[in-house]
Length: 174
Image (cartoon, rainbow, N blue to C red; front, side, top):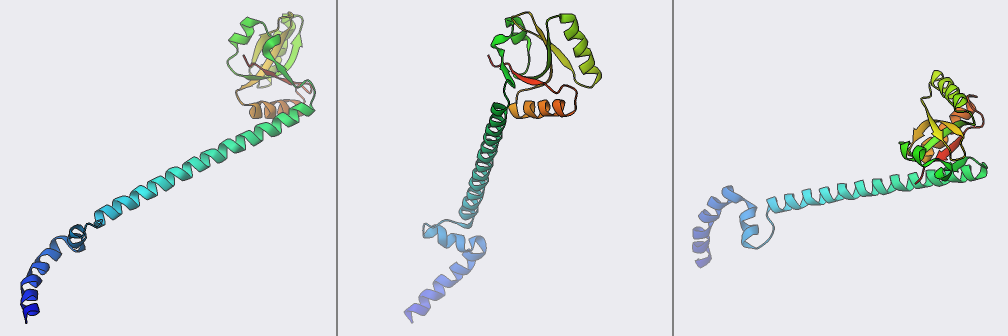
């Protein structure tokens, strides 16, 4: 009987509390996470998983770029005299170049010949830049790029198009 009396006292109280907070009231009393706490934790876990996926994707992209660059460097090493470093350039020319790599389609002892060749390149859709070497030669550079992969593709394209079958890449590395 005592139990029934206690239940009679507690039951109306419980019935009043349930619509106000449901199970969260009992969870809070028991020191357990409420449904809002559980939802916030779920959102946090999803956000962390998405950030982790982005980091993995970024790392995969970097690995792919490295693999591509190594493959291109391997191809370039098999082609002798394909990449020329900037130490042969005049200081003024080296500093004036805006990109790291250029496809060079010719080098001339007479600057007028270099300008003519640059004009011919521009007529064929290749904006050209004149590059002065320390030894007095003037080269004609096209297809500026900061990516060795892109420079290699451009050089192959220029060679295959027949525009300049003996083109090479200038590496304007400081």
